[in-house]
Figure (cartoon, protein in one colour):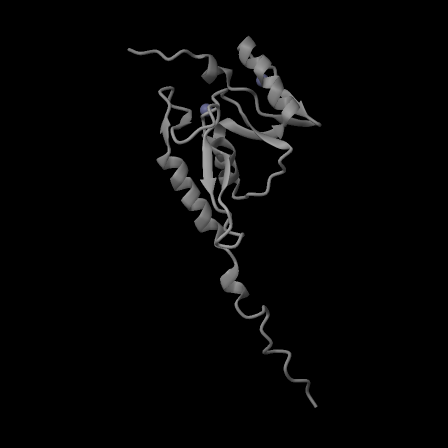
Length: 158
Ligand SMILES: [Zn+2]
Ligand SMILES: [Zn+2]
């Protein structure tokens, strides 16, 4: 006698597939929201947030698609959100800051941002004051250099 009933069992309980949030669609919406609320800086490299701010950083409002539809909106730094969206994740440890390499708090260009611990982020202020960067190592991992070339260069109008 063959054992019946195993081969046709549904792999997932009914409905689970439909409840899985479409994270890529969410991140694409975020990218659109980031684009719609920012403008290229006159230096041609930074992308400056022009939406709501907390007087220092852009404020990005969103609803986590993994939470129930009636859950509250969340607010995150627009620069942090830009980096999270670039990495396609919402799960980066809060002990890691989204640190600006260009020293422009409103910049949301992911290429100008890096996740790192506060101590390294704080070191960068020294670089920007000195207008030179000698490099940063975080627990053996080399972090990108500060973009003092962007932050120090005054805008020239021709
Ligand atoms: Zn920038
Ligand atoms: Zn530096």
